[in-house]
Length: 269
Ligand code: 1HE
Image 1: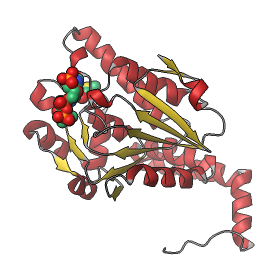
Image 2 (image 1 turned 60 degrees about the vertical axis):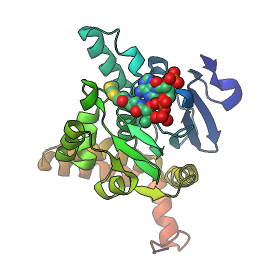
Image 3 (image 1 turned 90 degrees about the vertical axis):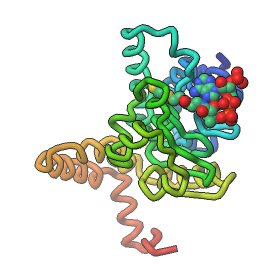
């Protein structure tokens, strides 16, 4: 483990496979195990959990990226052979817990994807709120050919992005989607040229950081629950959230700024 606080300002112990950096209100976490293609071993997964559990005050958005030629080669397969069934369940639940710290954490998270985004790497990307893909990115679920099954939340999160039938195809046939296909079917929100992903991810994170924290909370914590609720409960929850948001001082200040012509209009670039 290396103490991240001294060199990055984060009050959390991170393994060597993770590097943290702060840029104003944006936290940047990098997978830094390029020699193993950023494969996710236990220390890395626990480190991701610790990092997103302990984001300091003043951080309002985060970026998750990978060093080297690939975002992430998924589960560290060398750890898998030693586990029995009960340990396998505990391991998968550990990944669920860690990735929930991203999905339902303190701030929205932008993933920057390049090269292999496969297996557990795709599960990690799917737990983030926004995905920026460089044109080198490709997506696969090699679990099918390795004789295993996804365990990091893909069964829940990937169908929301690309649909159950595409996920079935990926697992049964080993189909690989390139970056363009991934963009077209909903894996990524933004597609950029090689080397431009991090800058785009930070630009988006800075924009997100400029939103009211209440709105960001509503979008990341409440919207996904409403989307899966029965419509009657969903409409009610939406109304409650809308009322809570508009009652917030920041909303009042922002609305006043618009009415006094001090806020930007919603126009096309
Ligand atoms: C690894 C892993 C890994 C690389 N676990 N060690 N994921 C997969 O099935 C994908 C497996 N990886 C690959 O297919 C390839 O490594 C890549 C296409 C990602 C990259 O290829 P390449 O040619 O750049 O690198 P490489 O030579 O294959 O790998 C470099 C080193 O990283 C090598 O180790 P070395 O000691 O020989 O140098 C590889 O063994 C090592 N490495 N990927 C362990 N994944 C919660 S359930 C989730 C289930 C899954 O994620 S299953 C999908 C697993």
